[in-house]
Length: 142
Image 1 (tube, rainbow, N blue to C red):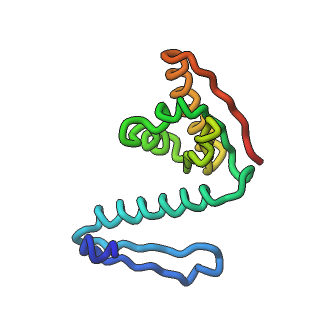
Image 2: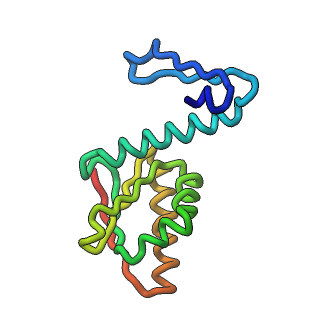
């Protein structure tokens, strides 16, 4: 579909599939930049879906009072996108428990990415706390 939308030649090489990965090659030519961005976006979606479906405790998590979720999401999701971009971590915000008064932020990536993402989330929450006087609860999975 990316190939049809961009005009770029996209080749998925599955010779390494038995090792747990496949290679995606985008050939130089028209639509290269757009196709590359679309592939990256789609891979991020797949990573986020895997983190979302994982059992509790598999990734580091923090619980956030429901009233503070907006500080993490930001207008149109902009704050969450910035935190993801700046940290390099995969971040999933689950609001499945919002009826219980909190949501869960789950982090995946290498140690430095996760640490940076958590730091940025806590900074946003601290900024929100200063202006609204709410508290933060934290925890972590295995």
